[in-house]
Length: 304
Image (tube, rainbow, N blue to C red; front, side, top):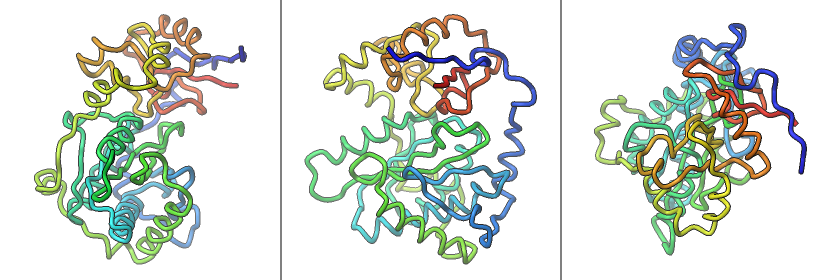
C-alpha cells in the first residue's frame, strides 16, 4: 500500500495569514480589466480550461465573457445545438463567473441547464448529464461548462468546456476556443453578446436540472456501483468532486441511498475515515495547496 503524508494543517483552523478575502476577489473580478499585452493575463487553456485569479488579472469578467462567447461560436461552427449543462463549485470566483456565463449563453440563445436548487455541482454530475442526454442520439448533442479551478487554491477561478463526449475537451478544441477568446479579448470583448442576469434567468432558454438527484438515481445501474460502495465514509466526509461539498450530503435521497465519496480513491479510505472523525465544528479548516477544491473548504489535504 502506498504511504501517504497528511499535511500538518489538515483538519485544523486556518491560520489568519492563509485566509482569503472573498469580497476583494469578487470586486476585482468585476472591476479589473486584463492587460492583453501581458501574456499572463490572456486566456490560456491548460487541462481543458482556463484558470487564474482576479487579483492577478488572469481570471476576471472579461475572460469569462470572452471564453463563453468563444464556446458559443465553437458550438455554432460544429453544429452543436443541444442543451448546454453548466455547473459550478464553491470557489469564491465561481458564482460571479456563473452569472457572467449565463448572461452570455442566454443572449446567444443557448438552451442552458442550470442547477434546479441553485447549488454546487460535482464535475461528474455534469458529465453524466451530457452523456445521458446524448445516449443513442445522432443529432442535437449536448455539451457543458464546469466552473472550477479544480485543485487550485481558494483565490483562483476556473472555467472548463466539456464537449458532447462528456469529458474534458481535447487540445484541438481548447486551442480553437482559446484563440477565439483571445481574439475577442483583444478587442475589449465588444463582439460578445450579453443580457442582464435577471433577464437571463427568466429567458425561455434557461432551464432547471436536478444534477444530484439524477446522478444519484443512476448509481444503482452503474457498473461503478461496487467501487463506489467501497468508498463509503462516516457522516462527516469530504467529497473530492470539485464542489467543496458532498453531493450526497445536500440531498435527503443522497443521504439515504449513499454514504459515498465519488472521487476518493480506495487507498485514501482509512486515512479519510480517521481524519474526518476528528474534524471540529463549523470553523474554517486549512488545506494543502495540492488538495482538491473541496479540500480548501473541509481542510483535507494530502501530500505525497
